[in-house]
Length: 232
Image (cartoon, rainbow, N blue to C red; front, side, top):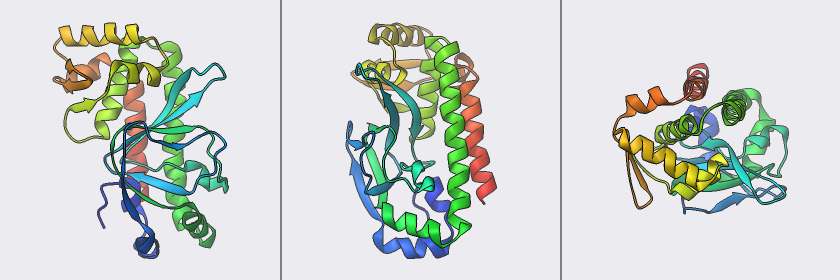
């Protein structure tokens, strides 16, 4: 079973066989909101080519991305606690495909034995590492470094070197002013690292982008690599 989603492919075949009749392939459009804080969640999503942002919304409407989820994981990590209410907003940042299944089906499987729980706990560990590292990154690193980190993490969840991201989208994800993103992107363009045209960013020099990023990218990448290694 190869679904182009790492976590779904790690699930034992016996569990996958039970889920198969309920798995639904769906296209997620840009900006689609999958969950709002406090909303009752009906489905768990396993992105295959879509990229989802977990966003924390402040009372004044300001927002910051606290985690990014793509083909390595699922949207609905809170199900391990039995909760059916989302803690934050989940919004589609890169349109694409996903596989979804009813929340109640996954919850029932969790209650039947530890096999699924072990895999989801390892994913949650990687996700918590990402959240913690992004909190540190937002506090201590420069905007240029944060932009490089965001582009690298998004590339890891996409095929190819081109991303459909506007400066406004990036500013919302990083919780910074749009002008700052434009200036940082301009510096990367002048250095020959990226090219930007009409909401499309093409990475021209991946190794240089890594050099200009902070340590956070490497920490997050290794966390998901450990998840895959431990779950095999």
